[in-house]
Length: 372
Image (cartoon, rainbow, N blue to C red; front, side, top):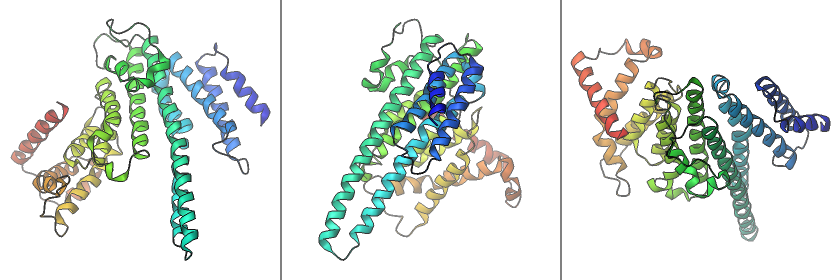
């Protein structure tokens, strides 16, 4: 194991490696990480595994900057995310859930004094694990923002009016680098080279993952009853919207923005964000199940007993009642135009051309208002 790790570390330090060599080193580093994970009694949060994950991040960073065109075609950003960042987030979340369950079990004991001690200890441990997760998310945010800055500098993605030299060390200290992001060009900008377009596609995906990191920070930093307040999610929405601005024809950021609207109990904008994710040039297929879920939730909201009274805190039920017909019509249209749903739709009455035209026009007006 030590020999393998030394080789990986030496490879990370080689700044002259070409694309093929970097790809090979990433594969070797991944194998070393897998081997370490299968070691008995391994500490997932220990320095050894952390070092291996950092090696993988560094290798991916160099690959993305060196050859964005090939990296985009091979979806290197997703591979980096699911290899070196997201699994760690899931491990932290699992650890927090484990401590929460243990604390709940301890409170059910007959001994009141012992129950109080267990509850206090559980809260302390939960706070500690949340703090560690928060630190990891903060560090990952800085890593991805610095990568965005490096890509923008290396491939001239900012207008000539933007600052020529970026201080990457302070990107995550002033609104998490949103000033930098606001100055980036769009992938649809005329006059871009194929490499610049590929780089902007990568940047859009990085911004989407930055939104994910901000979303996790909010989920594990705020109280549950604060989750439906729109201001709580401003940072995550800012990254998602900038990802959409950079690459509006890619569906993933639209889907992630719709997730935020779900937290805010804003079903109307959530429906159209999911719809845009599915109708983008590069569709985000999982949005189909998400859209059906939010529509089903809307139907349950108006069908449940007592739904005729207005929710005084958010107006949620009232909004769902007003939009019930539009939700139903949109759901019908969505199913009608999905190839995999044709067999089910054949049993339904056909949608009249006049009704479909009117519905499409209404959807477009709503989408235009949403974009504005």
